[in-house]
Length: 173
Image (tube, rainbow, N blue to C red; front, side, top):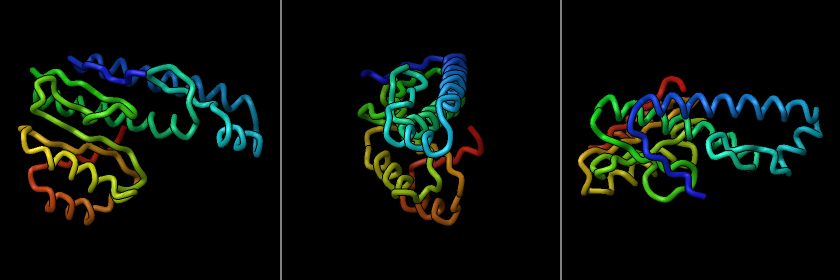
């Protein structure tokens, strides 16, 4: 399934964000009504009871949770990049699409995005910073992320290590 979208303006970002929130709220309301306690946990652990909030197909509930927040970070990243580069059009590679999470149509701007409990979870910040840092042909490199636990010292170390990569922590989604 192709999970690649071209985003030309911030209105598209707003519409996609609204769709994610509405779909997620609707599907979770349905899910809550279908079971309680251990039966509910069994369902979310073992059944394909989740729903991709943008591409409207069934998925594992945990995958839905992970993708929902990654999608929201990608959309926030496009908003930030559009404010810095208003004439650029961006492709977002949602989910498991290959390539950078966000890339300008001309290929001069790349961005990796993630949502996690902390920036050092699974070395995510370091791996994403390295991935964009390693591309020497682009003009601008970004990592934009959202975490619950900021670990600022860790982030500062990564920023120093990957000079030339702009690392932006989101305060909210």
